[in-house]
Image (cartoon, rainbow, N blue to C red; front, side, top):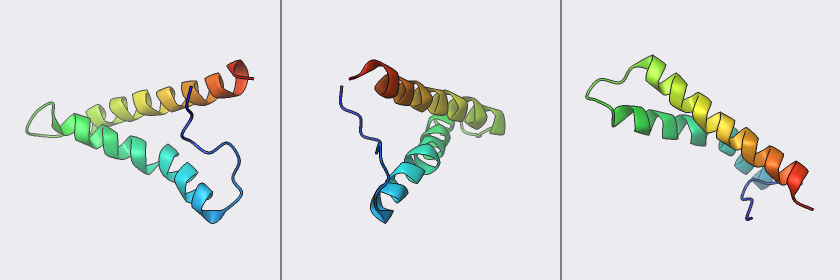
Length: 69
């Protein structure tokens, strides 16, 4: 399975990619999905989608770390 999040941070570019994958990307996705639910965005919707996105990333990281040689 391809894992597009950096495993080792050895440069500024990889640090920015790692930081964005855990902060900006999940938040941006949560805001976009929340805006599709209705004309008025609600904070709780964004938090729920953000939690789901971060949980997905934790699962991917754990799967990569524990289950792939």
